[in-house]
Amino acid sequence: MNSNNYKVISLNNDDSFYDKSKKIELEEDGKEVNVYWYSDGDKCVDDIKEELKALEEQEKKLNDKLKPYLDELAKLKEESKKNIDKLHVYNEIKESCQMMFGKIAILDGKTIKQVYKEFDMELED
Image (cartoon, rainbow, N blue to C red; front, side, top):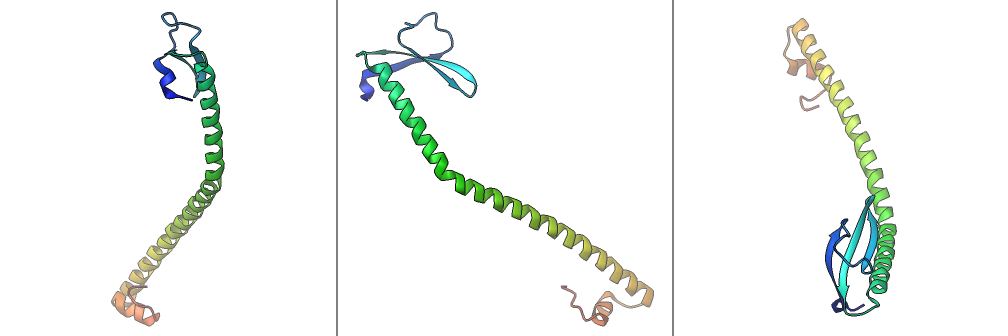
C-alpha cells in the first residue's frame, strides 16, 4: 500500500460533514470510531482494510509469542508473594522470641547477651 494514496482527515463520530463513501467504521475498546479520508484512487479503502488486517494478525502473533513470558511472570509474582508472606511469619516469630529472651533476662537478672549465650545463640541470630 502506498501511503501517498490517502490521508486521514478526521477520526470522529460525527459523520454529517464528510463523504460517507470514504469512511471506515471500526470498533476499538468498545467504542465505535469512524475514520474519514480523501484519496487519489479507488483502492484506498481496500488498502486500509488489508493493512488493518495484517496489523491485527501481527498483533495476534506477537501476543502469542508474549504469552509464555506473561505466564512465567505470573508464576514468579505468585512465588514472590508466598516468599514475602513466609518472611512476615518469620519476622513475627523472631520478634516474639526476642521478647521472650528479654523477659528471661529480666527474670534471671542477666543481660540479653548472657541469655543468648546460654542458648548457644549469637546476637545476630
